[in-house]
Amino acid sequence: MLDKHNNHLRYCLYARKSSESDERQAMSINSQLTEMRELAEREGLNVVVELQESHSAKDSGKRPVYMKIMKGVIDGEYNAILTWAPDRLSRNASDLGSLVDLMDQGKLLHIKTYSQTFSNNPNEKFLLMILCSQAKLENDNKSINVMRGMKTKLNMGWRPGVAPLGYMNRAFGGVKDIMVDSERAPYIKQIFEKTAQGVPGREIQRWLAEVGCTNRSSKNITLSQVYLILNNTFYYGKFEWPEKSGNWYDGSHKPLITKELYDQIHVGRMDYKGKPGSKTFAFKGLLTCGKCGSAITAEEKHKILKDGTFRRHVYYSCAKGKDRNCDQKYVNEKDLIEQFKKYINEHESEIKVSFQIQRQIIEHQKLLLYYLPKYGIETNKIKSLQYYADYALSSPNQKLMTEFVDGMQVKFTLSNGTVNTKER
Image: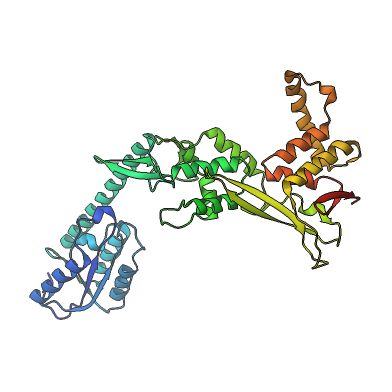
């Protein structure tokens, strides 16, 4: 065995602590340094450098400081290591192999721990390998136990990790579950309901800020968070774990919405190809100013009602691109809709629409032919375009309204709040 007082041994003192749960009982880095310094002074060990890091040793090649130590040994900066215990150096086969390989090459001459020494002889290297392999076995067993516990928890319907907004993680009696956040849950539910009614995401985000619904950081909920909520199946009772794995579980938590509401939202949203949260103004491209010929612009206003809901109002007016002094009045979108319905009712036979709208009218007519007779309405009195126009222009789905307006092969002017036609 090497003489511990031999001056040709130059030690690197190495301390490591992982934040993972399997090392919570390990000594802190400061405690390791204190104990090793006292040991070095007591036994006269020549420590030429001290290195430390906070990192798990379960996976090889993931510890930058440990890799630096290996390089230091190879380059001859030091030829011995002082550390608290063998598992501070290695908990995986690859790192253990590199230690033993450096011993075999005669570059690593000595490893000193608080209670043991390891030098380049068969018995001590074998003991080092056993101790480090035991540490690896403990890690592997813990991983298996964690996965087994995780699988049991999933089968019981409990989603791992932080609960989505609207829920809270709860622990009692050693059992962890997920409970409804009574403060935020009503607002989360209304996000889905408003979306089903055709309210855009940007308006929902604005409404959440106005009613004071925040995220867990007490900050306003962002537009991206609104869309994450709308895409989360957890709210109707199912979840996928891990994400994109294809493994689905029935949650044991209380759903905030029904699956029917979730599906209703996503059937509509999947068809939407526009930019998320972008504003939609159905009549902008259809109208020009009847006085100066400028394009028509639009803006939206919101009014919060006493019950916490809100109403959206859209107003159209001259953009004044050709005449900054144009005095044309604005008109409410609701008034425009009524004017367009009246125009379509009076001129149905003269109006041409795009092929896409023709197809939608046909599909809508099939439904009418099925349902209207049940209510005593004669099907031979159905005006296809008129009925579909009433349906599309009255829909809370802005995309449906916009598609219909855009599909009309007629151009309109807006003069003093009244629409007039002109050929496209």
